[in-house]
Length: 270
Image 1 (tube, rainbow, N blue to C red):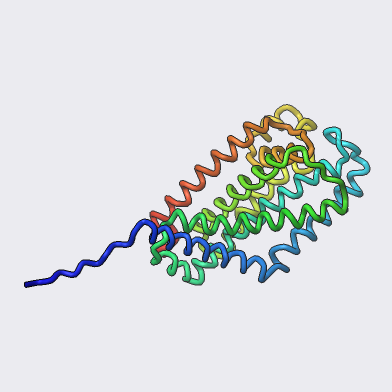
Image 2 (tube, helix red, strand yellow):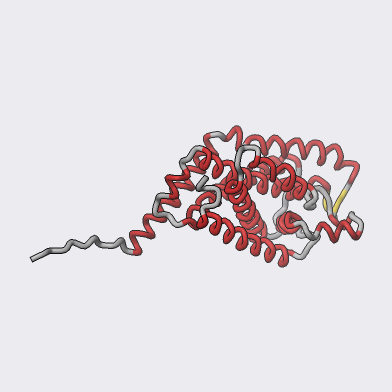
């Protein structure tokens, strides 16, 4: 008589527990990385924001006066907070993922039972953590210079969440295609920074000529900054509902793109 031994397949509960542990591990590693080198991740945005408030808010702002019915420093504060969230969410993920590729320890994740979509979410969660931490630091700096009222806390929270999510995914995709360390700084320098400065951080687009206002509406950062400003001040150059639809659409498109790149092994088999 022959006895056949069959290996029991893992249950859905076991797989879910494994996925959750793997996801937590990625997020903890990202959090530890952010806090371990806080002098590089949290301090520079606070110093940069202080300089913006001193130069643009105090010195130049006195000559500009009010904007949108508010003191100029109070008007630009939400934009400066959002600008910090954007750049740091993007920068955290692109540097972390490309570093994993460069150091070859991304292979440990690829051979693990974690699905690719969860790996993407793990890195994105790291970007969210840094985005929220930096946003909190810059908000603290802003409170030293001006008063920030809260018009709608839900709008503020959702705007930060979606914006950080979108640019964390953008950083992930940049990290997939980057061939060297120069490539991870190319997009932020030549694309992200100009879009941010022309995204209504320092001014209302109502000040621009008609053609420039039309061109500004093609900039997705305009919708992110203005939805966040609406949460604080109750004023916006664009429809807030449209802003959230654009951010939500970008989040879905970029997430599907990132997972698709992982499934095809783009940048991972070189």
